[in-house]
View (cartoon, rainbow, N blue to C red):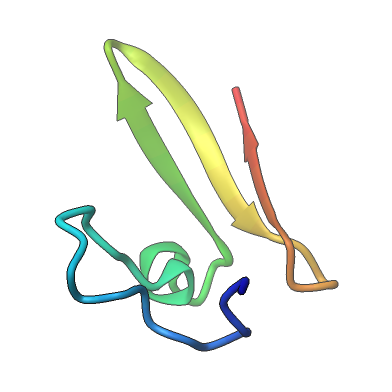
Length: 53
């Protein structure tokens, strides 16, 4: 069964969980760097996550 909005991931997993709203802060977007490439993570007005280069 898929997780509902606001549900925490199962604790049995070792995959890190992060709150996207905390990551993006008041600005609504955050830079994420991977292997020298910078990406922008943002939350849309509809509450969806977008990751762009």
